[in-house]
Picture 1 (cartoon, helix red, strand yellow):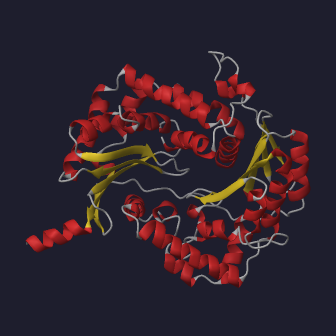
Picture 2 (cartoon, rainbow, N blue to C red):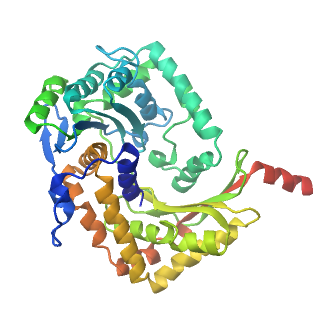
Picture 3 (cartoon, helix red, strand yellow):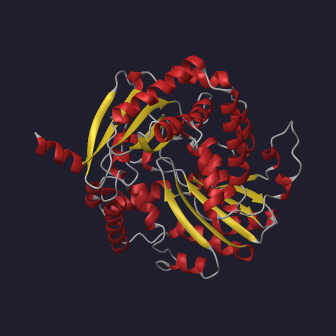
Length: 460
């Protein structure tokens, strides 16, 4: 579910362009419209993978560079380094001053950012098409010669610590999203610890550890550059070769996701939240990794339960019973062992246990009775629109193609992804509903406002 909604959100948040002519032609019923998505793949001698998706309809280009390093690659005692480097990469390089990356892009009418997840770190910019070389050069310069200095490190270490205070510790409900992963994954370090990391780990880290992390992971043979928009493919490839080609490849550390021990009993915990006004809860169930066979029907199941106001749980918990203010259901879409997640904020004076019982009942009902044809039609229509509208902008195409190249070995697989969802039938959804939602595979986290806990203690 998250992967589908992310594709749609990228198109809407970054700004919808015009659907490429090759995708806007009348759809052949026997062929997915994504089959005509332009995708060219190349690999430089130093191992850098290059994905090109030309579309001359709008005079802009989007560049996305994805590094195969996220918080899952971190070592215990060195958490938060992947996210720290998202910040460090804007602190200057051999030919670019501190903060100048932003200035050069914005002064030319462009936009840019970077993000970190459990599974990767990315950097991206959109520029007028005549500034393509600038974007490529900027990305190459910081891959080659990032300014890792004591002052830059200390500055960004403090920035991350302050970010944690502002965006995690002091925001209602956000700490619970870190806690549910800790609880569900237990001692499975790759996904149990948060992307932002443990602040003590960052405080204890020496500069040498930062340099070592960069040398280990920020190599051309551990990266993908994806370009979408108004450009000539031969010229774009020549620019990438010119600016990235002389960056030496490195010996990469071996990384294999460890096996996750099956959960054998329900896990429960409660967290107090001093900023929350209403109780809330998380449910998490272990499911297979993204793009495995059962993940697709599980994503559609999450949409039947929680996608939009006509979904089952919104209708029951928000509209009919008025137990909840809001409800979210989705898969976390991790490359390794994944989670099927439910998140709800309660309405005033409602009991979270009652709402949780409704969720359990709906899962059991789908396992025994299946879903309706109308529900299946609705989620299929939603997925079609997510892919077609969500891939309209150059940036959304560049980022999705880079992710498929990095995660799954070929950006061309994106052409087939819509079909993988549309092939799911009602029987498959019913089957997975009966397979993955046993109480022994369930993790429950209740979020209690600190004020409610204080009132309870005063009443005793």
